[in-house]
Length: 188
Image 1: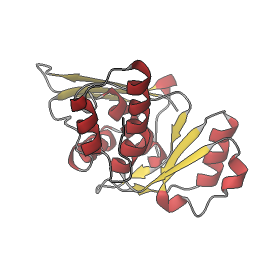
Image 2: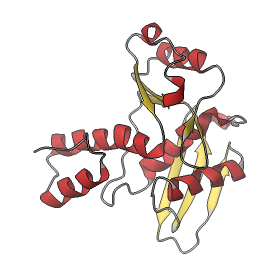
Image 3: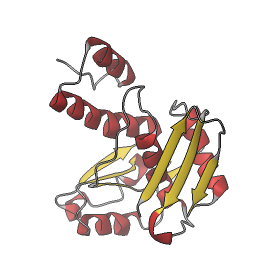
């Protein structure tokens, strides 16, 4: 599944257009991102498209939709960050921002590994039920909630980008450090 998202801030009309996912499900995911993950999407027009005409009818794609929205929102006030093509997201999102396991998780992860993905983000609750040895070459990232996904996936990728392209200043370091959990602090 491949999702496309466009977030437009400061638009004269705040609208949500979705294609390939139930509109109320998309509204719920957006609302949870605002309330539980702290993204400021209230003033954004959001256009969401599931590529290739696929229609999502189950909740296993919730996390992928949320990740796509996070990547296109002006994340942390300074950078839109596209998700690398080698990361997959599998899981349902609850109203509290928690990640929930979905049926056939092991089979889904096995398929992701066979397709050549390098990283797969899943709910922490699914971690015990899967056999990690069957996914050689695939890093499993197990997260409890959306904030943890943002911290463990997006912030680490953003740090690498910033360090590689030397676009960093003291404000950026302090702002990102404030956003991270206690164990993940950037030292320069």
